[in-house]
Amino acid sequence: MIARLGAPVRVTSPAKINLHLAVGDLREDGYHDLVTVFHAVDLMDELVVSPAAQHSVRTPGVAGVPAGARNLAGMAARLLAKRTGQGGPVAIEITKRIPVAGGMAGGSADAAAALVGCAALWGLPPGRDALTEIAAELGSDVPFSLAGGTAVGTGRGERLVPVLSRATLHWVLAMAADGLSTPQVFGELDRLRAAGDPPRVGAVEPMLAALATGDTAAVAAALANDLQAAAFSLQPELRRTLRRGLEAGALGGVVSGSGPTVALLCTDPEAAAQVAAEMAGSGTCRAVKVATGPVPGARVVVR
Image (cartoon, rainbow, N blue to C red; front, side, top):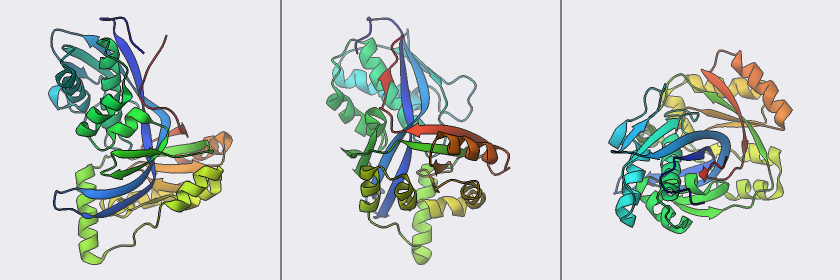
């Protein structure tokens, strides 16, 4: 969609859950090879992108989000202008709903939204392939935040193949009081492996088969994340959160990405509402949200 040039553009972008995350050994370049199944859910950040005299990024009422040039959304706006030779300074205001440092790609969602919003604001051709190339330069999760849906990610996670999914999945998201740094969690996994190599997740095929058939119970059984052991090591109370969610009636659960958000899969919306109510009063998490997926990636809001 092309917005009227100069008019503020409103964009939403979804959180993600890693249904499967297999992490390879540390490479010489400091990265790890990944095989992951991304799944976008309807917990959305919302950005308003407006023309301005100079670049700025604001996240009113939210602590812990980098400001200005250090914010990934601001980096996205500058990089798009540099790559296309078009556009100018923008003011970006972010309404945060995705937890900060929660393992749900909130920063990547904001970067994807900034790319879409600036392209619309500046009247650029709506070429997703070009935006995806720029997204990959910004971070491993940004291309998926742009695409949404359900997809297998390889490499650092930036190489995507869409996944056939006949399942609508209903989630309860249990959010922790404190965030986790993604580099810290990967570093802890490397340390644990050097000390004894904890069990690794299996092949991705069982998850892909469960999604293709729409079997929610099979999806729950296939949930797996190599980073979960590291997240538990850094925040042991997450074990209790996951256990309490299963006791409350969730079919399955997993730490999302690098954590610490615990994603609990439920049979249907009514079951999710019941699990959410029990988790809210359990004392095992800071906040609880209900979400559904899959949903599309970053999109301009038409009003």
